[in-house]
Image (cartoon, rainbow over all chains, first blue to last red; front, side, top):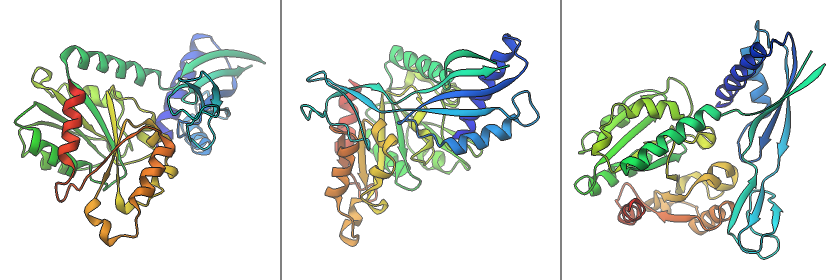
Length: 113
Length: 215
């Protein structure tokens, strides 16, 4: 249940931001979650709800943007999306790649009143 | 209603500490390995075998993470190595801060190789960079040939895979070639070794790899 630690980090980061910016109410937090991060959104929501209860972030909704796993082939330069985690270039079948996206775990934006 | 762009990494603090640790290891010439696996795959048994072979050749440190008990550190303390047990009190993974705190109990000037034995778990430790240079995932023959397909992010994050408990193969319906195929599906080019910590098989090759990478 590593989502609890992740939820705590999100809670702390957003709490700090709203204090700094003197925001009165947060409506939602938008997160970018890469395919490689092993995060279960429903577990993260549950942890966040528990943490936020009775705080200024009580009732804040988490929204998720799934970021696909994308690789750039080191041989032919082809950029390809990886389905099912099988990292083989769709053009030249090379297995040498560099990660373009998929490891993100980012608080993208917050919606406030 | 308005939108504030934050673009903040959730694990920013962990990554910063991991980077700090990595820099320190580099300065001190310490090679660090993050050992991950499911519970009971044989992390501690493999470490015992490694210690036996390398304790007189290099200075070894081991940080052991468990939810409870100091049993693993006790098992390893019979060797000429520095050990520190981290008890996570329920947490399912180690983070960089825990490792940094544990490092304070280790004499870094008398250290060549540092093993960080993570909490047995194939999900939660995935995202936590501990400042390691190499991540070794251990998977045992009893766990099912399709284990890599069930936990792709962790296997994808590994640099080396060790298939342990090969001594049991004659008594199992497992197919080690199938497991290897699945490992390579998730991480093409992954270095794969086969061991039996119980019989001591394949440990020399693992030690050779560590000494080679350390240079």
